[in-house]
Length: 377
Ligand code: PLP
Image (cartoon, rainbow, N blue to C red; front, side, top):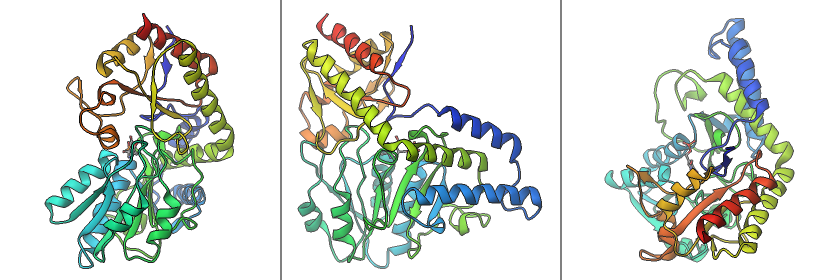
C-alpha cells in the first residue's frame, strides 16, 4: 500500500535537489568556516553565499541572519535574548494563546524568572484582535511575539498591522514564521518586523537547521557562548552542508512560490470537495480568508481524534491532530481551546491535513474517499 503523506505541517520530505546539494557539500566542503586556510575559506564562502540567499528571501541584510538549529532555537533566542537584554526597560511581554510550544514553554520559563506575560486571546477563526493588542501594550512592554501563521489551523495573523502599531513603541516585534515561510511572501522591513524565526525542515530542507532574523540595530543576549561564530551571537562550528542545502530549499521555494501555492490550494479544494460529494459532515477550523494554502484542519462530528488517527494510519494516511501526543494519548489542542473554549466537541474530533509538493490530485481524492469510508462505513 502506497502511503499518502498529509502531514507536511509537521515536517516535509527533502526536495531531490536539496538532497543532492547536501550530499555534494558533505563530500566536498568539510572545512571549518572559521579556519583561515583555503579549505576553511571555501567553507566560509559557501556559508556567506547561503546566508545571502536566506537574507534576500525576507528582504533582510546578511548581517541580520543568525543560523540556528531550527525554529525552536530561533524562538528561544528571540524570547530569552530579548528578555535578558532588555529587562532594565521592563519585564512585560505579549504573546498569544495559540503559539507553538517553543514560544509558550519559553514564556512559562520567563514567568518563573519574574517576567510578566500577557497571552492574547483569539476569536473562533484563530485571529487575534488589534484592539486587544493595543489594550495589552504598556510602557514597560519589551517584546511582542505573535506567530505569522498557526501550525495547527493555518490562520494567518494581521502581521502588517501589528508591525505598524509597534513601530513607534519600544517593544520589539518577533514573529514565529516557521509555518508561514515559503507560503507567504515576507518583507521584514515593510512590515516592521524586528525578529523572525524560520525552520528549514518545513520547506523541504534538512532538519535541524533554521535561522533567526534580527534587525541589525537591536541586541539580544546570546544563549550560547564559545567561539566567535555568527558574529558572537551563536557559538559553535557551523553545519555548512546543511546551511547550503537549506539555502537551496529556499531558492527552490522562491522560484515556485506561486505555483506551489496554487498546487496546494487545488489539492485542498479537491480534498474538501470530495469529502462534501461523499456526504461527510464536517467543519473547517480556522479563518478561510486568512488561511495558509497547504493546511486544512477539519472537525468531524461523532469522531474521536485518537481512534480516527489510528484508523487513518491503518488506511495508509499520515495526518495529525496538530497537538501534543503524550504516552499515546492526545492532549486537547491549546489552539482549539483558545478558539472554542474548554468543553467543545471540536477538541475531540479535529484532525489536521497538510499538503506538500509531492502530493497529487489523485492522492487528495483517494485520501478523501478513504476518510469517507472510515466515517460513513
Ligand atoms: N514554530 C512553529 C509554528 C512550528 O510549527 C514549529 C515546528 O513544528 C516550530 C516552531 C519548531 O521548529 P523546529 O522543529 O525547527 O524546532
